[in-house]
Length: 483
Ligand code: PHE
Image (cartoon, rainbow, N blue to C red; front, side, top):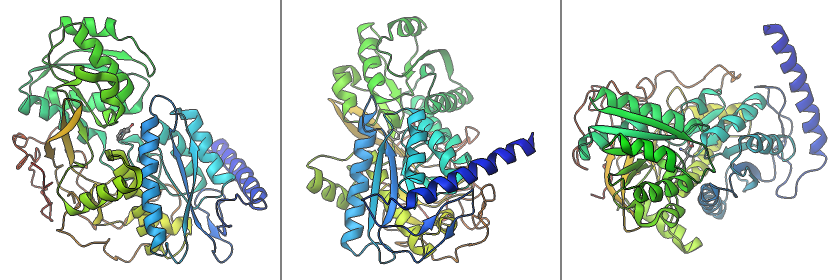
């Protein structure tokens, strides 16, 4: 079996290599030849002196039921690329990007990444938002040995795809923990129901994490119902859940369905709070859900109204460029470009294995969304923000820090750039993680403030650390300015 797989892999690798070299004769117009050829996994070689643009391949849902995910992410990405290029670029070269639309579909995500690697010859990849799409695209990037950074995919499995896959956000075990603790401690909920998108890795993982913490804390999950993306009628499920009389209903899906669920839940007479995760984060959420969403709550990656200077600077620049307010996806897209630029700079080249190693050794990177230190799983450990919906607007309620790890909100407590630790440049074959051994406090602390953390309740914005575990951070994280 092993041998068969390996043979298949070799054939695939050879095919990809051929395809790649075939395409180099026909360089796409967005940038010059990158000088790098990607072959089979982990065997990237720099074939000639790199000149021309450094090419970032982007794949996002630009159309369909999650189109604002792609729009916002790309707005953040474009802003960062423009800023960096205005200051001379990276390694003396300009950044350029090629964008592929996934339409929010996994199979299209895989094709998009194939195209970016084999036809556009990109140096690195940024994408996707939806975890299921990042898993599909990540498999392709991993097998081709191209570093990929998802700005915002939170499902645990995303970075488990392999050692070339990174993310810039927290993960769902933590996010589910945050919302369950919030339900119990802040909303005093004793019972909850869950309505899950059963085809979404994100929704399934988040539902599981919420349930785990809520039950561990002595709460009762009275029922769970399911739907699939693009459904529009949730009345059957909601009728059954309402009969069980839950204090809250947790809806771990994306904004289009969440808005409709809210409307129908109210029509059916459910009066309690609806809860969600970052998948609700879209200007379209309240367009769809309207009044029905009042006094509902969800978790996001950063408080965009925070008075933290780095956040304020970003918001101003974003407003100037787009005449709109950023959501947290825009922030994560923006941070992802700067993270890549930081890694490319430390790698000193676009060699894919070196860039991978540099990403893996990211420590104390100051983003707008907080401080980013990659742990051994290539996941940052960061705090989450809970917002409430009041009259169509998301307003800050509290922020919750994970146990241990290097976290913060882009405040002024830590060094401005990643510590120039000697980047491990050893073999970076897929499967072998070259992250420097336990260099960071985050490295061994499960990024998920695991449900086992029996720490103090998140009572107030000030001391909301739910997991004041012994792992408590070395660097006192800047608390997110806004009360
Ligand atoms: N975390 C979601 C997922 O993994 C994507 C998402 C992130 C959506 C941030 C909105 C805001 O599928």
